[in-house]
Image 1 (cartoon, rainbow, N blue to C red):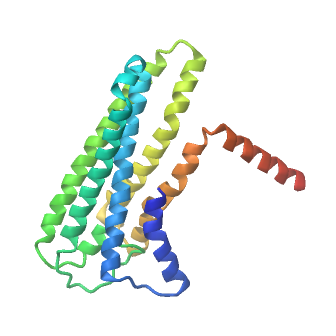
Image 2: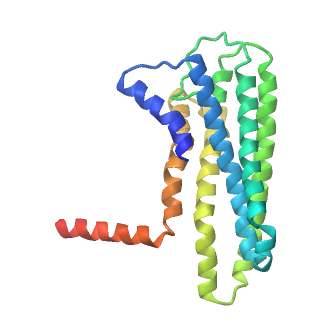
Image 3: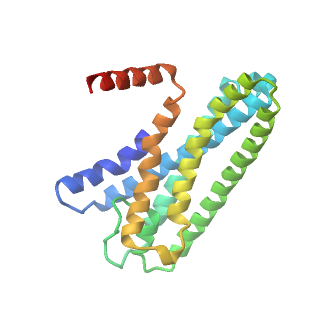
Length: 243
């Protein structure tokens, strides 16, 4: 989350404060690479975390066997390696295209759709093929997450104790909230009808999916932290007393 925000927001803030709208070709390529890397890694890690929730609730007796330290290390390494390969392929392929429709992206950071609009080569179809592959891969992860949560909720509803159900739900809800926020903002940004497309709307949607989820995710995960909630209560209580 911190990495994806640091990839896009500082440069946008610099351009805003110094009233500039420029970024170097190398800087644009680096920004695209790291943004895809962190976003891809987050999605793969969210999928792995979903499997963790599934095993802990649906197969608790096998948790130590299925998710030992070695298995966790392998899944984390696979997530980061897949994200690295994903971002490397997209960045290399995108910046191998000849750009002949000017150099104005119309976005506050470098993203693939904005760069493809500047290309006049038919080789952009190759990048579209990569995008279709990425969408299929993302849909596979999405289907796995949905299937896992169907099994999780079925298992939770069979728990006789209300306290047990509450504990199981509290374990899953932060992760489910982060997944929903992450996927919904990306779907809104990329699956909207072409008739709705406009420079201002595209810019607003880019901010929505690239800045809002990484900024809110730490807060969502922290809601289960009892010490943090107690500190917030003390802060609010002190503020009301001052008023």
